Length: 488
Image 1 (cartoon, rainbow, N blue to C red):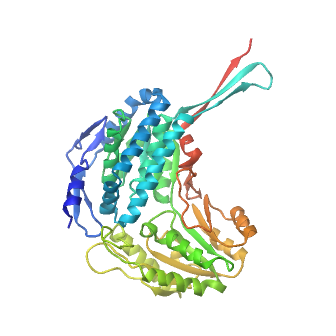
Image 2 (image 1 turned 90 degrees about the horizontal axis):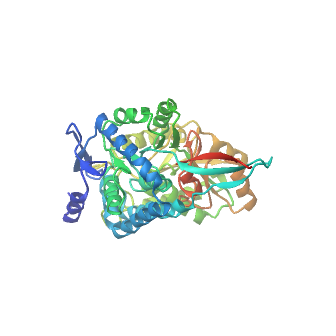
Image 3 (image 1 turned 135 degrees about the vertical axis):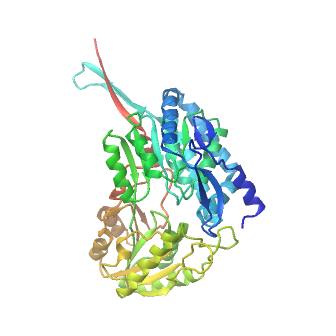
C-alpha cells in the first residue's frame, strides 16, 4: 500500500511519451503497468509506445539536431547545471520514486541521486571544454586543424537497476556534446526517467532535444530506430546477449556504439589483506543495490589461509541485514526486481550446493508478497559451478579458495567478461602486478566501490565497447574532423 506522500509523488510523474517537447499518449492508446517489486502492486500506468511513436521520437530528435549542435557550449552547460541544481532540490522525491519502482532501500536511492547528479555537473563543465588542435604540417606547406563535432541524433537504451544514474550518464554527455537523443528506459523502471525528463524541461531544455519513449515491445520499437539512416549513435546498458544483437543491428548503418554489458567481477582477497577492509569492501561490492549491479562482485576468490575467517566475518555481517520494503526504517536489503531474478538466484545456489558448496546463511526465497531473496553466503564453491560462470544479479556471496597468486589470476580471468575486478592486498608490488595481469576495464584496489562521474566506466572482452563518464565520456558523442589549409 502506498501512503499519501507516495501517492502525491506518483501523481506528479508524467504518464505519457515525451516527443518534440510535448507529453502525449501512445498513438494506439496502449498502456503498460509499473509495479512495486516489494508488494507486486501496480503503482502507475503509463503510455506504451508503438513503432510509429518511436519513429516520431526520432523525427523530433533529427529536427532539433542542427539547432542544438549550433547552440553555444555555455548555454548547453548552463542547462545541465540548472538540471543538477533542480535535482538537488528534488532529491527526496527522486530517491523515493526509485525505491518505489525498483525496490532499493531509501539510503541507497539517496546515494544514487548524488551519483546520478554528478554526471550532470561533470558534463556541464565538459561542455565548454571541447577542444581540438591547430598546427603546421611537417612539410610546412599547410596548416592542420583538428576539430570535434557532435555525432548527431542518438538512441539511448537504459537498464532498470539504476534508473536515474544510467539516464544521466548517457543523456548528460550527449547534450554536452551537442547531440539530440531518443531515450528508451527499461519497462520495469521507467518512472524515474520520465520524472527526470520533466526536470530537464523545467531546466529550459529546448523541445525535441530529448525525447522519451516507454514501451513493452522493446525490440519491435527499437529495431526501426536503429535501422533508420538518420540515427548516428547507439548507447546501451544491459545484458551481453542483448548487446550482441544490438551491435549486429547497428552494423548496417555503421553506427557509433557504446555498450556497457554484463559482468562477472572477481573479488580477490590475498593472505596479507587487511581483513577488516576486505570485509567492508565485500559488503559494498556485493550487496549494494541488492546485488543487482553489473559492478557487483560475483566471485570471491579468497586465499585458503584466510578463507574461513573471511567467510565467518561476512556471514556475521549478512546475518545483521534487515530485509523489507525499501521505504521502511533500517531496511538494508530490498526485493529483487521480479520472480525471474529470485528463481535465478535460487537455481545458482542450488547448483553450487549440489557440486559440494556449503550455504553458511540464506539461500532461499522469502515467503510473502514481493520478490525477496535471503542475503546468502556460500563457501567452498568448486570450479565448474554455474555461480562462477553466470552473473548472479542478486544478494549471493560465493567464495572459492586459492593457494597462490598465479592461481588467483587464472581464476579471476577465467570468464568471457571483463568489466571490473576488486583486489585486496597490503603488498604494493602485488597490487601493481594485478593492474597489469587482470583482464578488466576497471579495478578497485583495496576498495569495494569504484564508480565516479569523473572516471571512465566500461569493460573489455564481452563486457562492452566504449566508456561512459570521465574525460573519455563526452568523446563517445563527438567525431573528429581534420582540415588542411594550404599556406601561400
